[in-house]
Length: 389
Image (tube, rainbow, N blue to C red; front, side):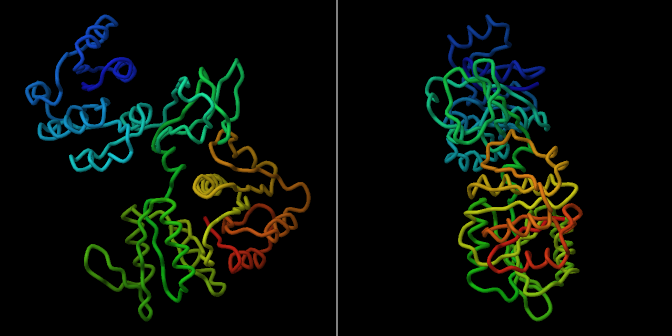
């Protein structure tokens, strides 16, 4: 059974999506209206231990009232051994939930339901009058949700960031863990420091800050890397370090520098995690996604993620067939172009027009880009390069 601590329409919205639940509504009038609609409702104060003690340990409780009351109930619920989920109205108060041991905190009802069901789900939300005139980028769907369509006057509009919303618009959202990963794929970044300048270090710090990621630094000492984690330092070989981190499933990106062509090292890094070859950029104002792989999903996802945090990005498809992998339903500024002439010539020409960040694949099985030219792009010191497998 699910226990929904909420009131009014929000309580009904959550309960209607759950197979078996009871609503605890502290407002007697609201509780009565919900009962009339056929919901199983208990009128009472959920922060009272006597109310929650009626339920068995391990049952899921969903806190969707105001934040202060939610946090008060969370304290009681955790003491009684209930599995606590919460919708946080104010992002700045998330840490208060965490203090009470609530790890499943969502920014919207839709994201919460997706978390509960552990898969992507589709929802439709109507734009209220207070959002009239605001742009789509001002609409906070939460980290777990993405607007994929806007329905207006019987038409489907592409959800680009500067689209002005109108009251009555119907927003189609997809919510779930995969969406969160697409929107922000980096929680932890490993910086392989080695012989690195201050500019490259600042760039790594800048990327970590933009994505809100932890930056884990490996210092090169002789032929090994020393990493200080959890209060102690230890020297390990690079391959061993990567294997340890790969098994821990906590690392999302490697940031490093390459001074010369080293195919085996880069291949080893990229086969484990996307690898950012730093060049000392202070921002990524211009981003190019060079789609030079027959499986371009990772490149496109990375382009969308960087576009979301840094601004406009361009995806150059070197094979027209690859365009089928690209969805126009995206909240990001992603310009799409398809090579119409010689793919290698188009790729070089585009790269030479000047970019702060280039995203490409080491597999390089689309576009007939010469391997030496690919390495010139990777080792170019004017652009940073994000290399995927």
